[in-house]
Length: 295
Image (spheres, rainbow, N blue to C red):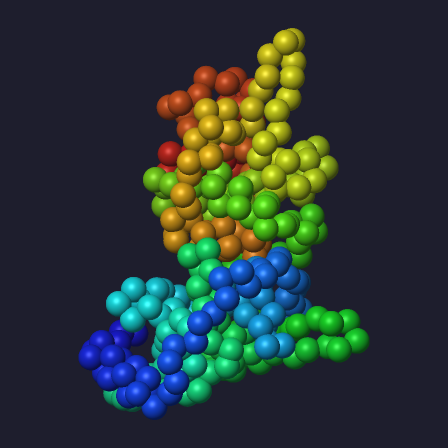
């Protein structure tokens, strides 16, 4: 589905802006925490924030739920396309714009709290967005849990409840996961980026490896007087200069929800760049781009 002309979107935005107050200034230090969300009965973990008692989630979460998510730089909007509607969330504005299937004019609705950007990620209201996409949410006061029902469970992409340690990821953990994924897979496809992040998360869940994301990334083992780094960007310090792209951030977020194109791998390597025989001896799960993934 495509926009019925960006001009109409711009007109809708301008018309609504002229009747509303000045753009909302959103705090840049909104607390984002890994949060459990139950999707069609399956617990997943997603970054989330609580704003005005409403859960705000990355717009990219809806990629996992059968929608298509993109970013419109011209209008500074997160755009979510579904079978029946296109939703546009201009950041720090008190409205959302909707284009229903079969219609040619955008509609604007008041929105509170507003969508916002943090760490190159757009956050949108979970309940509002789900409702517009034909889904529903429920809050269980007894367990303080939020459930999302998509009404289309077959479209879910590899959501899993097995990652219990990852659910405790801190902001520091996420910072280094974004950076190592960029350093290792910045030139790879989106799927390749998700796979690299997923393989690191698989290590965190494996009892043989450290219990946190940061410890796993920076782990160094010592044998016969030599130090062995798990990831080359840590060894050569590229990780400290890595600036995660928007695509890398989306890929890591997708891996955090349980998506795993690596096939459960706990390591990956570029066969053109390593002669490590132990790594090469491991059972291969999949090859994506320049990386071979293995268990």
